[in-house]
Image (cartoon, rainbow, N blue to C red; front, side, top):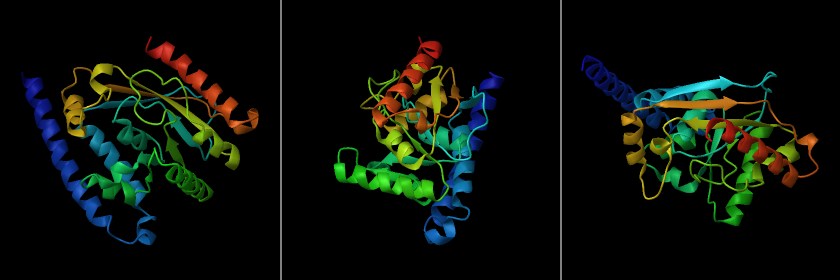
Length: 249
């Protein structure tokens, strides 16, 4: 009983901390981008870790890579849950790619935009082409990005195909992809299924009986090893399917 009370008090304090930090970041987000670019992404990283604590998620990074991580990369990961939109930037210095609707979320949309999140209308060909140019611009500035090649939350199991975008960009820029396999031990709790809302998922995270989120990072994969984006995408997909068999099946 005492443990339960202490957990409730801890979560309550974390949400107070998160609320104050969120309002602070939201206020800063209205400053000119020329000022924000010098410090805002670092604050966003801390905010994501604060958010993780408030949700009660035990986020763990497992370094399965045998070689040092490259200085610059395109992070690719599976996308079973809503949590990775917070979890990945809490562990990696990356700019996320998100659906356009996120831009309109209360408070979070403005904060995400100020932090350098790139937005795309997934069903709009022109929007997809435009965001590719923006991603390449970010990479040319020395930044890292994260792309979910499944093209959205497809469930706890890897979708049957990976879209080519991340791999085409990798080939065009010469920047490797960094594969990160995401594993939530309480799969039913973390998986995002329609018609669940973001608030529904927050409550599921907080009340989960198993709050462990395991992020496994592997060695970077370089574009020079492949003849085209199709072969590149297929190879990376095969790796994710192997990790899925190891950790989920």
